[in-house]
Amino acid sequence: MRIFKVLSVFATVSEKIVDAFETVVDFADHVIHRKEYERRAKARKRFWTILLSVAGGILVVLFFPYRVIVKKNGDFEFRSLMLRVYRRTEEYDIPEGGSEEFDIEGVADADEGDLVIE
Image (cartoon, rainbow, N blue to C red; front, side, top):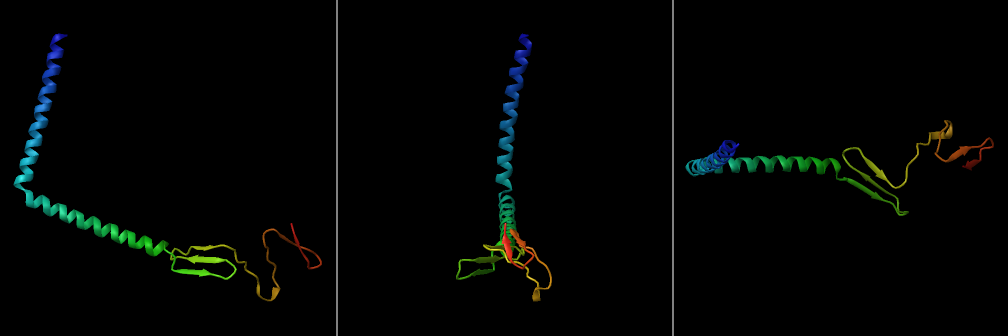
């Protein structure tokens, strides 16, 4: 049992020595190739800046309303390029001439032509 504890301590100490040596080697590599690392960092920053700017611009164009209509009675309408229309009140498709039937939710047709609200 005692030999396992000694081996465990030896493994832990050797692992810490390897980690320290790895840190020293990484630092020396950065010092030697400093300009290359700086050039890569600048290129990476430029790439991500351009990518995020383009993605943000596309999202703004698609979702930002390009047309806003506010009527005197308080009704409003927002339109965006995603073909989304947000309205306070819904418009109904009423056939021209009144020859065709149409349904409005909550309103039932009566036989005498009178509208009955359910």
